[in-house]
Amino acid sequence: MTQEEIKQLLEEKYLEYCQPHFIELDPISIPHLFEERNDIEISGLIAATIAWGQRPTIIKNAKSAMQRMGNEPFRFVMEHSENDLKALDGFVHRTFNSEDLKHFARSLRSIYSKYDSLEAVFLEGIESDDKNMMNSIAHFKQVFFSIPHEKRSQKHISDPLKGSASKRVNMYLRWMARPNDRGVDFGIWNRIPTSILSCPLDVHSGRNARQLGLLNRAQNDWKAVEELDTSLRLFDLNDPVKYDFALFGMGVFE
Image (cartoon, rainbow, N blue to C red; front, side):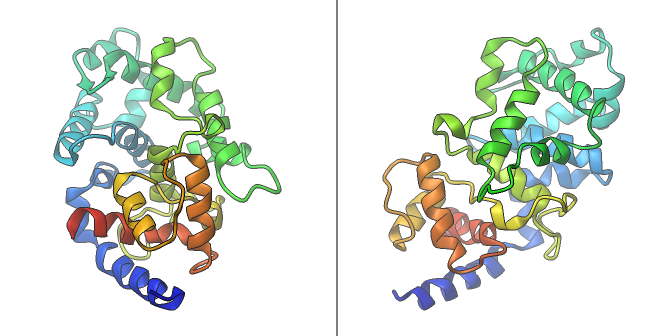
């Protein structure tokens, strides 16, 4: 295929899969349960963090986490006592358990006491010449684990400075920062430019990217993310991450 043919395919698949009726099948359905900005931020972060494994299980468990928070995640985060955290006992999704979720509640309260939004933390980590969110994601992780915590919880937010593709964080960033022009992503963060967002690289998007000649690197690591960024920006310099819908959709639904 020529570059023009590849671009046309990606554009067609983006329009096909960036549709509201796919929301109920995707973890993004969790933040779509809420209307308030902070509730969307918190529920989205938790849903994205546990987004590995079968999607029905991810959605079921993310809903369970919200229910344990009284379906008011921001209020729960900001007003909880240590006794209230007992409501999270028994939560588990694969290796993410109730102690990890309790740290999320504690850390989020600490962050919201200092920042007006989670976007502000990511924004603080962006350096003037950054072409992607690598430094920003690493900064967010540093802030998120700046309060006392069990070391085991650190694995649930990946670090691109250590080579991780940071698939789930990149997905979360797409949800929050891409515009809500098609009723899927939220666009509640408008200070982070979509031009520096990266495609959430996983087995589905990676396989299709390689088949289309957009990615040569064999491992799904941060170097592969940067290579795929370079390819996708040739098609849309301002919003390359929109092609996640195409690459992921072709992998899952076709």
